Each structure stands twice: as structure tokens, then as C-alpha cells.
Image (tube, rainbow, N blue to C red; front, side, top):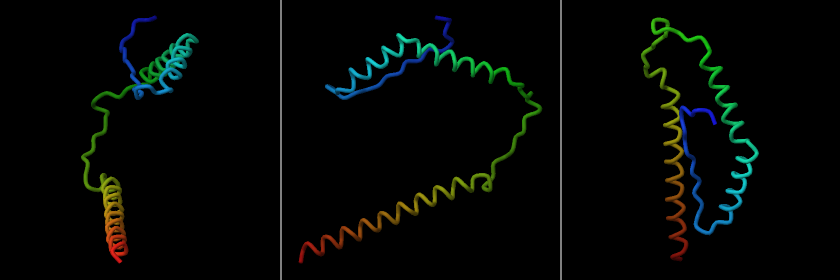
Length: 106
């Protein structure tokens, strides 16, 4: 294997006694024996190499813009829509539980 500039471990957790554990291990072992892992790493390194060969801009050529509320408007709109829908669901669930409680008392 070539010198690795970055080695990373990946861990998959399965519950104790899970039938998936042995099947998953067998698939990983077969992929390693077939050379699929090395092929994926080599393909990824080739792609990264092509990206690094792209022309780079010097610091003076980079464009910097200050963020304003206009730039972040979409994020705040999405946040407010999520909060609003959460509030609607909360009110609906509270009313439903109150009605269910009143009907069960009768």
C-alpha cells in the first residue's frame, strides 16, 4: 500500500446479538479481499488530485463580501417556518389531549 497521508477508521455499532453483525462483517471482508476498498480509495485520490490541479486564485483576487440580513433572509425564513409548524403541531396535540380527556370523563 502507498504511503497514506491520512488514515481513518470507521466503526459500525450493532446491538449485542444482532444477526446483522456477522453478515456485515462478511460483506466488508469480501469487499476488502476483492480489492473494492483499494479501488474506491484510489478513485477518490484521483478525483482529489484533479481538484488540486485546478487553477487557484491568489489572495488579492478573492472576493470578500460582508454578510447582511439580506444574505441570511432565506435561513431565517426557513427557521421561522419550522418554528411556526412546530407551534401549530403543539397546539393541535394539546387540544386533542384536552378533548380526549374530557370525552373519557363522560
